[in-house]
Image 1 (cartoon, rainbow, N blue to C red):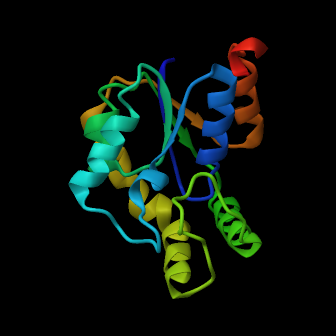
Image 2: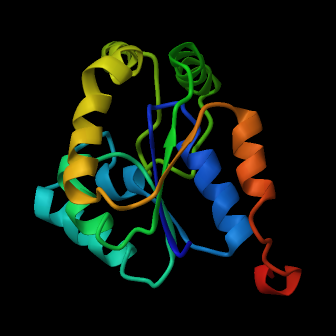
Length: 178
């Protein structure tokens, strides 16, 4: 597994799993939200975003977390050798998104100048989180099937399954992590 794509709802644990996999396998981690958002939650030009993603996945190995299916699957999936879908229950995702917003801590998986805060946009985002499985996931899955039907997919539903996956992978020697 040289190139892994992680998909899932907001709050499902994509960034956390990506960091854990990156550390365990000694692979760079690509957080698509940091490549997409400009300070103040401004969307970049589509070609600018695609250029950032292309540069980030040009390496021989990586862990890439984030959906952005219609915008980037044509770049990422032809190079991926594994897809991990986090099937975290909707109430868990919802609670995590609210909690991390209330904690108001800087997150390494968000672009600079994009703090989460409780405002009207956040309430709209909560609707996205709550309706992800019904309203957004089918579209992501359709694009995945069109662009990468032969790429193996692992579905993880809870922390026990995530821990089992991580435990089953070879760890990088300590000297490689320093």
